Amino acid sequence: MVEREVVVDILLVEDNPNDAELAIRALKKHNLANHLEWVKDGAAALDFLFQRGDYAGRSSTLPKVVLLDLRLPKVDGIEVLAQIRANPDTRELPVVILTSSKEEQDLVATYEHGVNSFVAKPVAFDEFARTVADLGMYWVLVNRVPPEIRQSS
Image (tube, rainbow, N blue to C red):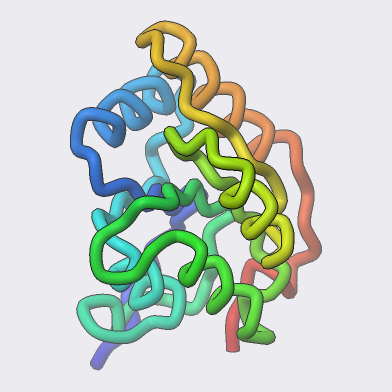
């Protein structure tokens, strides 16, 4: 299969279409959605990151950040995070949990698996949009990672 060179700055892993649309709109408003890939379940996120299944032909460049929900179909967010951290090619990839969960056990479990940040989704529309935009601006524009983290083998 021919490799497709597609730059993705943000991998949004979100099964709720309303939350995804709101996040994408907030990121577009701040010109951060031009290089965004949205997947709707944990299995698709892993396929994207590890270049398999529907994503077998994509380039090896990793996103700058993964915005990851916890409650996902097929493979839950904690397992996605665990697999990201278990693979040497993705171990250092910034992962931000963006979830409606307020469970302390989820917070603890994600940090045990090496999450970079845990953000509870605000309920109010404007606050949610502002939070997503702030996350995108920080992780895409402000945060810096070494070049080897952006590439997988």
